[in-house]
Amino acid sequence: MRILIIISTLCVLNQSCVRSENQLTEAQIQEITNSATEVVSKVFEYSNNLDFETGLNYYSETSNSFFITDGIMHSLTELRKAYKDIGPSVEELHNTVESWHVKVLSLDIVTFTLPVKLKLKLKRIPEFSGRLIWTATLQKQKDKWMIVQSHESWLNCAEVAAAITPANDF
Image (cartoon, rainbow, N blue to C red; front, side, top):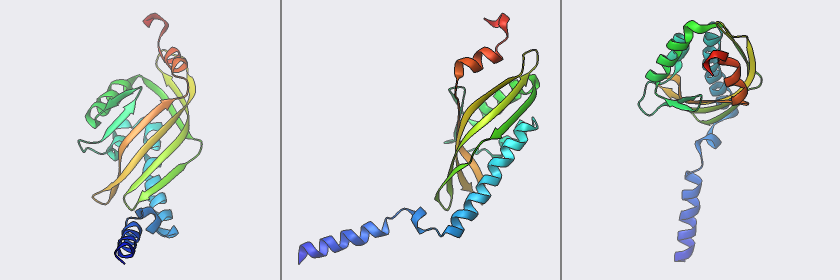
């Protein structure tokens, strides 16, 4: 009898620990997906309009948020500085999200994995077109979706480095 009680208790505990994703309705998942996707779309839109500072307003300022670009992990302060430094050199930038892969993990956490085509024109350097994968985790903070983690991975880093580095820098 004791074993039956233990097994029954374990079964109940197991069911109570089911991930919250499984407890969301399709309507909730769709609403969460739509609202978080709207934020990510805005970030790319601001970037395409060379308004990096406004786009970064959707990035979390919490101390445990980190953002990886070019293999370097940045805090939001460091990321703002990096964009402020590169911004005046950018003549044209256009990101095109090729497909949206969104995973709702809970009511307040969503992940994105996005293949992106990028066209970049820096001053005094020929235009470059390439592809990258952008991943991010968004978390609901004070009733707003905020990017708490992002990572850009170029599909061919050597090609990117050669394309955006002036010949006299070698």
